[in-house]
Image (cartoon, one colour):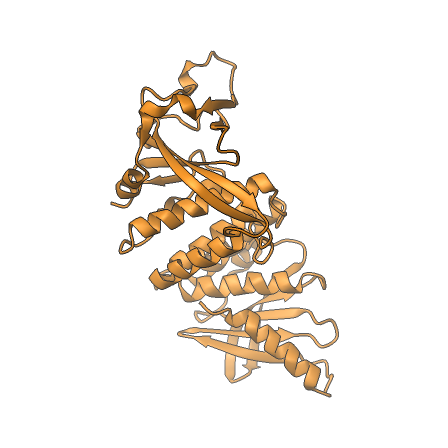
Length: 341
């Protein structure tokens, strides 16, 4: 998927730099995609961005407009225009950059809004799509927005992405619906859930130390919804020049999802954002997967079940030494086949 909105804003800035006309009019460029018409514009004086989306089915109710998720730095309003470019007598929802320091972020958010609009289901209302996208971004900002992942967090995300990469390689002709069960970025109990199988990803930096950390007593809980859980362990070597960066791995997976569907590509980007990943921020730390191991959390596997704790005891974290779990080890290809059905 091309970044049409971001590129359009760049084109407007380029035109502004070449133009001697510094009028107060906002220079605008239209974008047309099927039945969607949007305009990108920039204010000459402030260089704040404007993004206009036509409302094809007439005006929204005031209550709808008020309910749209908002945050500091973004203004939203609805206006009727007798004449708007080639269009006559139309209503538009208008997004206005209200903070001069957030131009690039505004473009990214509007690109995300546009992408979701053009890939929406035919029966999904425009308002519903916009509301969902804005709600995700508002939640993202509540969590602190983009914060640089530390090395441990980068390794954790790398492990989850590596599992996806290996799953895709083992199931080349299968739509990568595994993505829809990726719960790691959302801090869900298990990193992946697919076909009622849970897969928890662990990374180990020192392969001589086969200890992994279980974050709480519910993480390895066997339930009716998730009757099978597996541990997929990546032994990583971290360096400054050998292996893959997070950005390398993201780019490879992103290209694969794009080949299957635009919806999966958008889902991947949304989940990456929830994980704290920001493009071009993770290009200096390389990771090399030395080997992988997979364990079934069966009756022999050591764990602390939640129902074994006395009342009042919770949030128990503990370590497991995998050198004592050989009887529960299975071939990694097995889990790829099971979850790929």
